[in-house]
Image 1 (tube, helix red, strand yellow):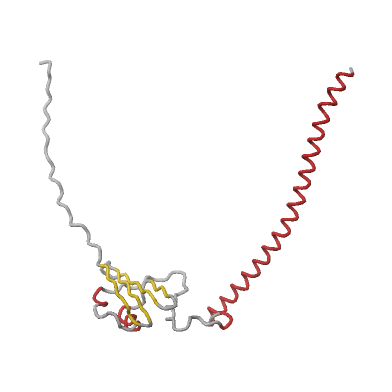
Image 2 (image 1 turned 120 degrees about the vertical axis):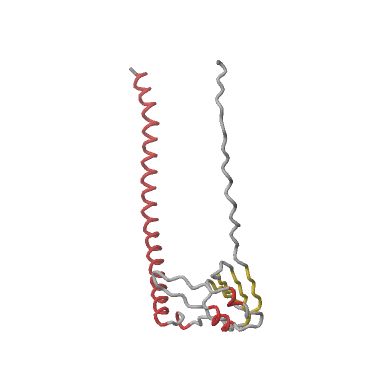
Length: 183
């Protein structure tokens, strides 16, 4: 009987200690999670408030056409960006013909290019230069680099030509003969 009691005690003691360790670990994990969730919520709330203020400032600037907080909209000497329509469905820009760009050469003012070809499909400006990109009605591409308000370089990519249609192959008639080796 003593042997049975000793073996039960030897089995139950480690199991009880293991259960106690698991329970303490669960309690500590729960406490850490609740503390972390409180700070995460505070961080989320602060970030949300900041983004709401930014959204209001930008919406107000868009409504008045001014930069937020009276800041300058463009750097000194930079070319103003082309305004983008803020409608749900903006119609595509018309594509100018290749011939529109025949008079455009280095030294041509940017305003003359816009007057001849219209708004570019894309315009990328940095502090000292601007790249205007036009897709032409013929399927070509024209890239114009503007420095100090004047055309610096113009690159014309001709339209891709479709491959010439290939003549259809003539159908051949194949005669088949059945050979009956048994007759």
